[in-house]
Image (cartoon, rainbow, N blue to C red; front, side, top):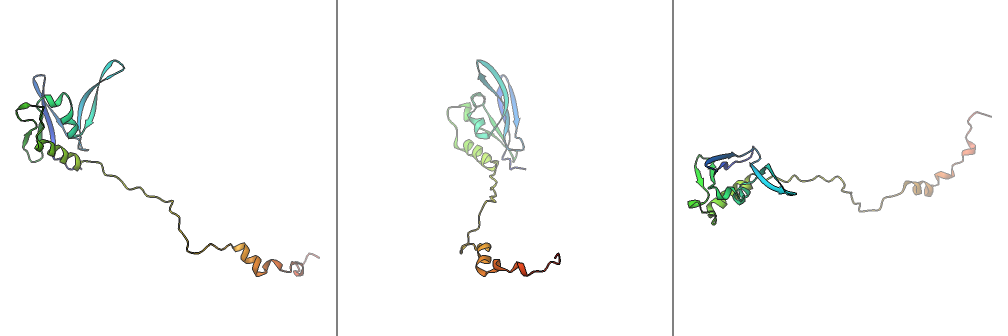
Length: 144
């Protein structure tokens, strides 16, 4: 389980407060509206805490962080979304860094061993030792 510094985000939208809880990956599932080929589509997307603060609708709706220790942190003081306080931005970045997916190192099996000496060819060794000059005619196989 990942480290959840922010357990939920709430925002005041159309007269009521909506609470979006943090998933096991450390992201928040939020409906995002897009215009695709002239049609309006709404999809649920997983956003990071920093992306939540940059979301056009949520940042205008007085967002509040629910922290792991039980405190509530109002993101924009006085509801003014034009200025993001450093404390709010720091909480979002700390949460995102703690829940960032870790890179798994790739194992490479294609490493070739380098030799300090040239490989010797066994065929040339037999040729040089004279084993190819064996007198095969002298062997009696008993078929006469």
